[in-house]
Image (tube, rainbow, N blue to C red; front, side, top):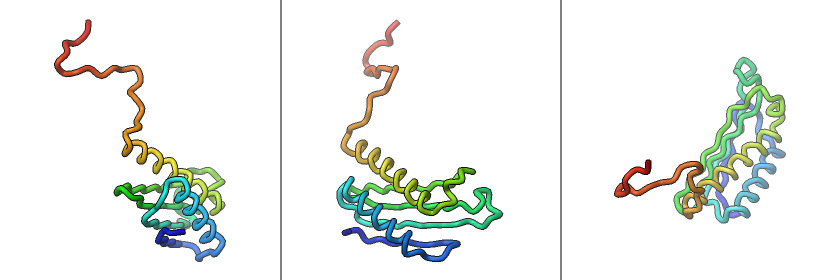
Length: 128
């Protein structure tokens, strides 16, 4: 792994197993999108009085070449799967990959055409 990685644990004890899982996910992100210049991951468990009921929240902030800044965070719903930290980490990195893919497509100009509408030049009269 080439990426400088910072992992923070908030409201829970640091876990070597979660740390290894995050490192593997960052490696996968690098293989998919090329070089990641830096990455900060926050793993947080809110107290049980919070609306998510103690579900894990994972925020990821990777930065990629070309000044592409990808910030993903997700407040878990009442979905019980987020009580498992491994699921929360996997879900957060899935979201990060999707956001990174969208940003890279936009940067390359590979955006989809508008559906159902055709753009017209300002010089053209409106069609009747």
